[in-house]
Amino acid sequence: MIKDPRILFTIGALIMGGKETQLLRLGELLREHVTPILGLVHWGIGNEYKAQVATCFSTNKQIQGWNIIGYYQLLKQFQPDVVFCWSRPTAYLTLIIKHLGKFSFAIINASIRSAPVHKNLQTKLSSLLYNLYPYVVANGEAGLKAFDQWDKPGRFILPNSLTPPNLEKTKKEYRAALGFPEDKFIITMVAGLKSTKDHKTFLQAIRECTKLNPDIVAYLAGEGPTRTAIEQWVKEWKLTNVMLLGKRPDISAILKASDLSVLCSTNGEGMPNAVLESLAVGTPVVATTGGGTDTLIQNGINGYLIGIGDYHILANIITKLKTNAEQLHQLENNTSAILDAFSADRALAAFNTILDTVLAKPYTRHTTYGKKAA
Image (cartoon, rainbow, N blue to C red; front, side, top):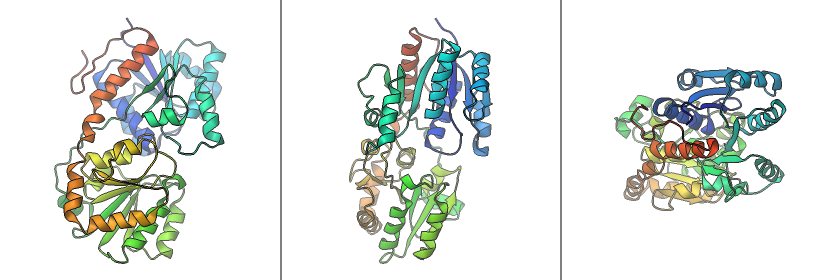
């Protein structure tokens, strides 16, 4: 029996985003409730993550991009039983070094975090490269299917885990604490500022629905390369009711203070954190259809699904919910069921199943969230 398997996680730049958040949540669970010795190799850490990384991982080292020699030396030093690759570049680098250095560790390619709706050349190439790995992990069925990995041996789902938010204040109290207006209909979009999140569609919907509903306020939480374009649209369309919040550590509070959240992704999400976190705090979601989003939102039950780029429908839904408090309240009442499906216990059970298979033998661990490992 392997008592304390040495697990090394690898990722590119550890900056604020969905896959980064899930890696750190998994690290917290494993560090507190199971016994593996955890290490992390990365290409850089954002300041917002440094303290959490230091808590989660016994070892964390930075390498400079495709530094094969530096990474080889780190692998020799850490001597992992398993390397859990959280990004495609580090998965490719690990595969090369494993064969060149004749290492015996097992590689798990856990980089699938999307479920592209349209298969372009990059998607097809990625699908072929995933076939090089004996073990591939995604955070949802949609991702495995999108990259043609579904039903192949050694393929697993490691679901995102939701920590029940510790939100003791009311919506009104959170609005006061955040400086949000008390008497407005607040809509929030939590997403990195990049083209695939399609903030333009969201802003077009806000522009359309506020013509008849001036009491609507929209917040954008996130940062990224399309900020300048977004600021230009806001200025050009005179959207004085739209505010960019930048990177925020208090996303749960922001979502709790909102009446509705929106996600307009154009490239299918694997299992979007923004949707999960919104539903977890009781805020309904309107999101574009595709990928794992379709498994989270029940149309008309806990939110609505819309077509990609369809800002007219989005504006209509916002207007309808803004003027129909009873319907909005019904949606709010149906959001909490998501917590059980993405509990820490389920994530730990899935992780244990993966390790049992990869190591080909049981290892010492504890599978119940909330109790320390013996």
